[in-house]
Structure formats: C-alpha cells, structure tokens
Length: 244
Length: 367
Image (cartoon, rainbow over all chains, first blue to last red; front, side, top):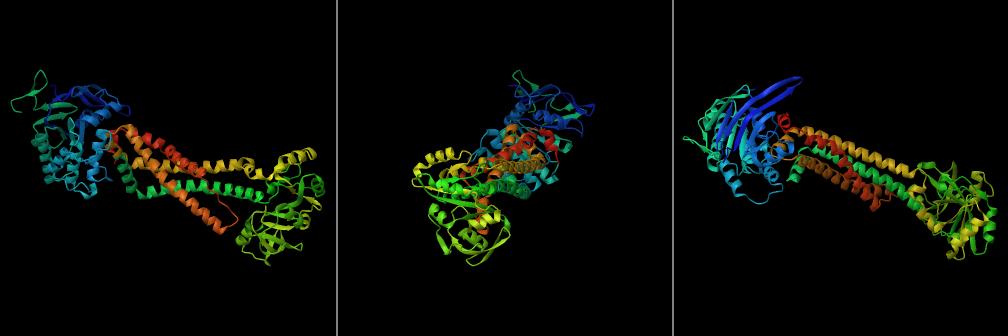
C-alpha cells in the first residue's frame, strides 16, 4: 500500500498585484496511514498554504499531492470539492461551527454533505466518538452556549464523523487556554490510537509537537527537517519503521 | 438538513426575514388588490347591465359599451322607429350622466319611468317611491348604504341638489336615477338620448333583431345585453391591460429587488458559513440550491400572508366603500404566487452564484 498522503515537489505561487510570492517552493513529504504528524513553522513559512493544498481547498502551481494515490494538485474545483467531501476532515483554530445550528446539527450537516442525503438514525461510530470527546450531552446546545474547548471538540467530531482518510487541524489549540489545549490534544491522540485516524496538525507551537509521533518543520516554503526521515516505505508503500 | 440550515438562518436574522416576507406580502397584495378592484368593478358593472333585463342596447354611432366613456347621443325619435319593428315589445331611452362629486365616479340614468319599467320589469322597492319632480332622485341600496342616505335626504350630484325620493334594489344598470328630462336639461341635449334599452317579445330573436337593426341603422351599434358582461374584459377597456401589466411589473420589481438585497446581504454576512460548508465538501450546486430554497421559502410565506391579507383588504374595502367590489379570482391568486416565487428566484440568482463562486480559503478567512 502506498502512503496515504504524498507530495512531490509541490509548489504554490500567489500573485499579489504584480508581484509573485512563492509560498511553497518544492515540498516533498510522505504521510502514512494512521500517523499523527505535526507540520510546524513560524508564520509565513507556508504551512497554512500546504494545509490548504493537502485539504484540496486550493490548486497547486506545480508538483503533485497524492491522497490515496489520487493526485489532487491539478484538480478543478468540483473534483477538489469531491475529495474534501469524501476524504478530508478539517479542524480550524476558530472552530468554524455554524452558529445558528446546534452542536448535533453541525455534525449532522457534515454527515449529510458526505452522504449526499439526510442521514437518519444513530450511528454507533458517532456515539463512540461523542463519548470519547465527552460531548454526548452537548448536542442540543448552540456554539454560543458551549465553551471554547467544547466547541473545538464538536468541531473534531464533525471532522472525523465520516471517517475521512486524513484530518487536517490548523492551529487547533490556538484559541484555547492551556487546560483545554491539553484536553483537545489528548483527544487527537486518542482518536489516532483508537480509530487509526491519520491526523496532521499544523501549528507554530513547539509544545504541540510533543503530542505527535512525527514532526515536520517548515521554513521559507520548504521542509527544513522531518524526524520521519528514518521511516522506510516498503515496496507496497506501507510504513515499516522500527519505532512505529 | 438543508432545510434546517435555511430555517436556522432565517431565525438567526429575524429582522431581515420579516422585512423580506413583508416585501413579498406587499408584492402579492399590490397585485391582488389592484387587479381585484379593476376586475371587481368591471364585473359588477357587467352584472348590473345584465340586470337591466333588456335584450338589446342600442347606441349612437362611435359609442363604447362602457357608458362612462360616452358623450355621444341621438334623437329620442329613433326610439319610435325601433318600437315600430315587429317583435319589439318595449323601448326605453336612457340619458346617461357621469357624476364625479363626493369622491366617487357614478353613472346616473335619466329615465322615463314608464318605458324603463316596461323594459326592465320594474324596480324592486326598498322604500320610498319614484321621483315625481325634476329635483328628485332614486338611489339603489348600495349607494344608500355607502353614502348613508335615506328617503328625504338631500344629495349633491353634478353641482345640483337632489332629494332622495326612493331606494331600490341594486342591479338595474345604474345606482342613481333621475327623470330623463332633467338629465337632458343637465347635459343640454333636449329630446336626445345616450342609448335605448330594447325588450323583445321573444328573447330568442335577439340575434335576428340585432341584424335587422344593423341593416336599418348601419352606423348605430346594437349589442346583445347577455353578451355584454362577457365582452367587458380588461382588453376591451382602453389601457386597462397596460395598467394591470404595469402594476404587476412594478410589484414584481419590488419583490426582485428586495429579495436580491436580502440575499446579497445575507451571503455577505454568511461568507464564513459558506466557507465552512465548502470545506466540508458542499458543492457549488449545494450552496446555490440552499440560497434559492431560502428565498423561495421566504417568498412562499410572504405570498401566503399576501393572499390572506388581500382577502382581508377586500373585505375592509367593501365594508368601507360598499359600492366598490374587489374580485380576487383563483387565477390571479395563482398568478400572484407564481410572480412572488419567480421574483424570489430572479432576485437570488446573482447572490447565489456569487456565494457559490467564493473561494473556500478566502471565505474561511472572512471576518
């Protein structure tokens, strides 16, 4: 099996007026299924751009971005929308829950969009998730009636409810206090261990890296270091590493 | 699920929702009440003409079937010639006048009571009696109720004071009846008349009689009274169709602009929400469909309130002005609802396309 996510010389150039800005200058990484990885770097290093490309939110200028072997870098908008619907789950710094809906409805929206029709009945996976995230009794509340930590846990449930291939979390603790940050990070680790969910955290916070198995550091649009360099990918693409 | 998002969005912005619904309500009411008034007045006029009981209305050359639009007249002596034709039972001359005093527009009939009764079968009296003096007037029960007048009261018509001599059941052509001599004197047309009502021995011969009258008096229109009501369509009244079309156009424009503004504002407010839905994998079609459904939902609610409101206004108008009839037909209700929904769809085309075209990354970054 090939890595679940792979980029090959991925580049992204923005045009700001007449000036071209190279946000990504050839990023090549591989992420295996079930990994919990962190992409870290200072502001402006290109990590958010990389997350948008990996999350099929934007089109690359050149290079490849393969998710389960499918190149999403050159896809048009509707193809990328389909990839997001089927394979990606997002967790954002500002939670990004729909404010007019309850927590339960926010999760139901993701299920409906994923399946293409309204989803009825209980889902054992969802029940398990809500218990794990300790928000099963918050489903009737609107985001404004939840704490920051609770909102982020609802956002995590929304991101993973459809069992996406990859969960991308952009500064998931950026709006939380240290106690809630710790809870959220532990939950990411639990999700990774219990459901073998592939999770990529994008952050500028070095403390967050301690919760992940792998750290990819970026600077000036390129990967500066990757402690997963020692991972060897077998011929079928499976990870075979002594440490993992 | 889309419905939940739409309902939640409408609830979250109550002022916008109420204003949008009210605008569509106004659109529907504008169409139904204005069209209902024109249709109602036209229809009621037609029924009143039918109620005269004559078989034929005979008029001077170049006359309209709408009596308020006529000022032509002809010699009363023509009536004698018509009466001589075999098969004619009675002929009654009527001099029409238009009274616009007192904030209303009414047709007065100047009649000869004897021949008018012979043609129409006579009035059904509520109270009082036929006029017996030049300054007396007979009014119908709707007019009496609208103007709160009774027998013996004074009314001013065409700058002349009349005393109400009697009140009759409505439906005999006009609401006000004076002596034909008085009417002739008021119009300066002594021994002339605006029309003749003709009653035949056998109504089945109406078509043959009209043909004969056309041959004898080639330029004088003779109309079948039973067909008169059906001939009184909006297209036969000069410019009425244009007026109705203008009202509908203005109403639809109001609807389109309000829905456009409402949806344009809401997609700007909800840029981030649209970005969230797009990040979850919602397609452009999903976003467009959601905006369309939201505006259609608003329009349907507005249209429903508008229809109910129009019927309430119609009742109110009739209570306040008994001589006015607001006729709201099922056909126009359906058309008004279609116009309301169409204006919602038209008004949300651009906002929905704009919403769907938003870049998800930029939409998520929107504050």
